[in-house]
Amino acid sequence: MNRYLAVLTFVGYLIGTTTCGAAPPQCVDEEFRVEIAKVAKIQKPVFEETKRARNERLNELFREYVQRLGGTVAAETIKQFNALVKEQGLSNFDDFLVAQTTPMKYVKDPVSGDQVPVFGPLGSDVINSWLAKMGIVDGKPLHEQPMYTLAGNALSEHIDFALIGIRDPTLSMELLPPGLRENAKWAYQRLNPTNEFDGGFDHPLFYATIREAAGKLFRQDYPEARLSMADVVVPVEQGGLGIRSCLLCHDRNYSDVYKRLLGQGLLSKAKVVELRDGRSASLASAPLDVVDDSEELKQAEGHAKVFLLAAQNVLDSFPGQIDAQAVKESLAALSRENVSRFLPGYDEFQATLEKVGCLECHGADSDPEPTQNPAKYGAFVLDTSPYYKARNVAALVEVVNVDDLEKSKLLQKAGGKVNHRGKKVLQLDEAGLEELHGALHKWIHPFDTD
Image (tube, rainbow, N blue to C red):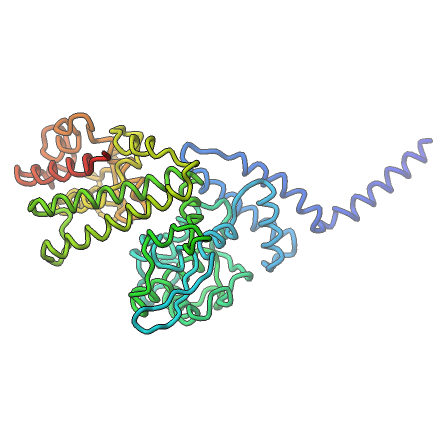
């Protein structure tokens, strides 16, 4: 009997060695299923923090996965790892591509008559304009390109698994419509002059390349063919591009998409009223190059019309998934926790902070003296990229008394009324404080939701 058991044990050992000892794909997959399931349980207080933590861990696991399967990043390797990720209900770059680049359609340029390709909001040059604002620094290596860096941050904070720093052989120019490929080659060469991926892409590079290629198409080649936000959010079956991308960035919350569009529309409407009443625009909202009020009014009217129509289009398309009254009440609610309430109008307020000198120390790209570094004392530090708007707002409202603006720490410290480490370098005079107070009031009370 003992000899019989010994034989069975030895056979079992041989079977185990044959099936899993050499790490064949099915055994590796089973091992990584367990690890990916652990990633799916990661939860942080904020949506973006959750995605970033998952993304970082999944990138580590992918590198281990590749090594276990021979060390070569092949198309099938990525596809299989993506499949394991999807098994756990997590998102990957494929979800991003579907949301950002479909549906595919052509619009007729009214000037030339040419057919211009648009595909999803990314290919229409409307959404994610903050990425384009980061720009490209000609000649710099890829890892120093602002647009590439920000694309990586954006993917990390919205996609559970986006491959960063490793070429994805499933991506190529062939995925783009013919009318955009030349622009994409131009954008790729500017973004990656050292050709780090040998003509290929990792996920942030593909994202940034398409965004810049579409930007050139609609900013330089066919500016009259560009779609408006109101056109984009129309449902696909009605000829629009839909809101899949919006839902991706708003955690699949239809009300939040509606709220973002409505808030921006109401802000522009309030600006129209201000300009029509004959009151000059605040210095914070004035562009660096002087334009007359009629041009500013025309622009504000255009923005108000487009964003209010976009909000209405979304509401009409998804009436059962949006509580319009609750959204309006949320836009009116003055609560520090209601960060999205303070997004409209923030850009103008940030411009005022920069104008009066606050960002000389409180800007992320500033270089203050160590004894006057806000970060050292837990004070707010703002990243001026539009992508970080929500994060900046959350930091600023901590020093704003929304019930009594006069008592805001922001104003008290800027005037030196309370201890302010930066007052040796900057203490606003009466005119500066008045300007900051006016801009603060305009930011906190930008519009009437009624």
